[in-house]
Length: 465
Ligand code: SAM
Ligand code: SF4
Ligand code: F3S
Image 1 (tube, rainbow, N blue to C red):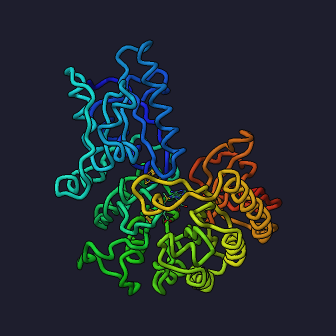
Image 2 (cartoon, protein in one colour; image 1 turned 60 degrees about the horizontal axis):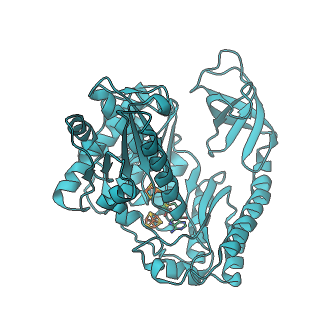
């Protein structure tokens, strides 16, 4: 079917964004072309998320609409991939009969082959095998094997690189381990190759991805003896940072997400302090500030443990930015639990926080508990935390006023195309008047003149480069 055009619609987290890019590059390698837009595409693939009920509703709504469009667009192929495809298995065809194929989290590598079979008349193809048998493990590693072809990048300056697949933590509310399977670390040589390829394609900033990224390399492999650590690190993640920083000099910034307090070791803190390429930003989900709720969530720490990890990071890197995720309305969360969360968020001094209303996920331990906080109360708690965060974010950002911050220029700002935006090392969005000749990927020193809770505004202090 080569020469046909494709479009990929992505829902969910950064891991899904990267999976979509990897698929796009694989399709290009098989002779397909990216479509100008979804409306003109011959093939539309929806990459889905299952983390909350609403995320699934969005993807189901989208594939429903696309399948309805098949009446007016004969030949249109609609496919589903990602976490919801994995969760629903073949049942998805009962809900969306017009779907041509559905591919789980370990089989994206098979999509070109499925498209060829569809071309020869097959339909309703499903590849959502049981996770963690030998075959699915191989298929998983093949799906991530470094793509040689990086022509299709969603964003030319920054890129995601998945280093740790799956999750072993099994927090009581979370569907991710069920749909992504056990934790597997990718080999450092393979990761290094991918980062080099990305940088050769113009990328200047990579974010290393894993659900508990600090678990990287901790249980499923021995760090290869042929890769030394002149800085004397013994833990795999600091060693990986050091390797990438040393071997890929064109790379301006290394980021990583998501972190868990148990991963905040002395070495990790030292790596943040001593490797200049590693950015002073840690995203570490707190989920709740109540010890009782944290225990029922099975997060493996209490509020004091979480705050100790924050303190260790701040001691090593005083200007570090710390961001978080919080769930409101977990089963049994009382007003007092919620007030604990507000207090601990203040103590932690978060630069930003993503707040989620608890959503029961089928098959998880929390789904057995009564979802006893009403929708209205979840919405209220959500709103209170957002308002708290606005006040906190503004106060924290005030420290940037009248300082110079280095911004990796991305391009015209979404709200005002006359101005440009980019990110500083702390991952704050910075909006500025572009100097002449600026190109995406330039590092520009910006003098900050105004701050909002989530954005800094300023002017270049001198021309870039
Ligand atoms: N592995 C990451 C971590 O633990 O930091 C989180 C990954 S999850 C994809 C992103 C966020 O979604 C979580 O941190 C949590 O706040 C939220 N989340 C996960 N399951 C949820 C659920 N059932 N209801 C509401 N929010 C949920
Ligand atoms: Fe889900 Fe917990 Fe794993 Fe994060 S660490 S993906 S919240 S099970
Ligand atoms: Fe969603 Fe799967 Fe990511 S459930 S948040 S797309 S790992």
